[in-house]
Image (cartoon, rainbow, N blue to C red; front, top):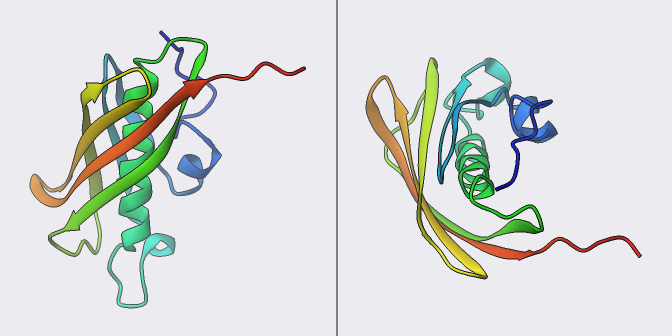
Length: 135
């Protein structure tokens, strides 16, 4: 299976930019967190939906990454997010699990919590493809 990039708490530079940090990752699941700060808020003072979406996308990518072979990569095909409640401060936690992994397509689900309450739920589809070697 693929190794998690240990040089990045957020899995990639954009994850680090928004303050995302994985607390668990492996065997088709992940848990990541973001501490809400002013730069992540929308004009109404609530967490921007794009922050939650990015957290879900990265959580799903990390969970699937843990099940890929070293010669495989993945990319998001589609994510459907249901937002239930606005979040204005505190910590968001995204719990992701792999539902199904085929040879070329995988399906994952994520639940996002704030203070133990479900604030968003998502279902995602990812493409799995071979890593192309430089010529």
